[in-house]
Length: 306
Image (tube, rainbow, N blue to C red; front, top):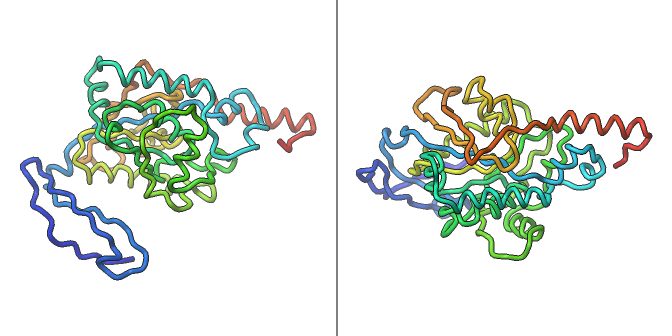
């Protein structure tokens, strides 16, 4: 751990936020390994102001399709699965909504979001590059990859293991798409082995949720987009949204949830008034049940090798 003394920060403006100043820890402390530190002064009122958060679930992946139809061979043959043809079509449908004039206040806030954060998994990066292409936040900005937005690692989840880190993540994602111009990706925060090495427990996932909500407090943006996964989105609502439908159900692939974030509320009650946008629905597929049934069939046939 390092203690960094930060000086020369500008006082907050009328909106309650000062200018951001970036430091390299190595420059300040002489340490060999350098980290970027972004610092700013802000008023308590600005930090605790309510935010609007948009949670996007990735489009259909080859893992989703394989679990739905019981294709164990596909599930076991690879890791960090990409999108299916149906998934690409789902992205095109969401991209169409992005390009259309907003019909509701929530859709207007979605288009006004200043930043897109994403899980580094191949399927989520591909979803961001396809579905959010043309979003104002990506016209000049990048998709920012954050390890804490990854899917919850389970004992059988080979789709939650990856091979690519850093700049290789975008290259891997684009390689599975048609040739074209895609948004840039900021992978500075995932230049390491960002995926979990073993199954994650509830306390570990809760810490990830806390860290992601803390990111909202440190930004002046009124709305942000998190591009993530079904289990992690459910865990967010279980941790902070109470016993609501979003804590129990799984939103469909490429679905978008708008939710108010009450930063000033006690932990466990910070997510309020969630709603599905763009005609989204909940998924009726039980991927775990499909997977177990497929394994049973393979076991009865004497072939579980995949």
